[in-house]
Length: 223
Image 1: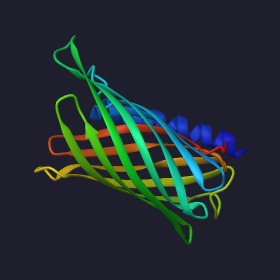
Image 2: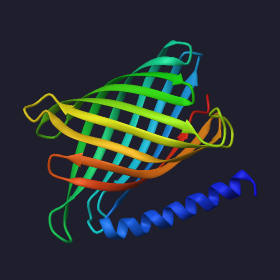
Image 3: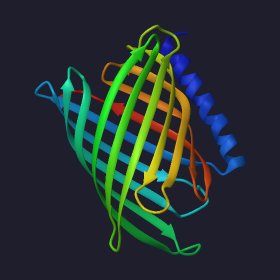
């Protein structure tokens, strides 16, 4: 049985298992596409689309678009980026009515990567200026991820890998702790330009503790 069949069987089994888990835990679902297109050696353009539904029984949902221009300070690493994000959230007023909230974000981030044996690590520090219709907020985020190949010693074509990450969100306002997101799942490294991941994310806020089924597609095909 080739790798594609094995991966297909695994992902189908995982989706079925998580669906059963979700019915028991009222799990939500997040879909994401993340693009990172390089040009002129050191420059890159980030493009990102996400659809989030944290509670399948609710009419609440969130749409996210982000883009940005980045520069590698060293060869294929130590990237600084200036970006913009538009976030539209639909919040339930009652069972049939909802309110639309729009948020505009300007953000600055720094990403550095390193590898220790089979462990691929990425650190991301992001500062967000968040503009609402009647408010402004400042937030700091620290993201740490680790990928561990399973069927090969390196992350290259047709590699299945474990994907783990944690992201801490801190506000500049009085309530410093905003949220924490912890993710665990499996990924498939299709080739050097494409990969996908599927797993469960735990989102802990001051008021909620949610479990979310998350699927993401990553594309870094250069211009």
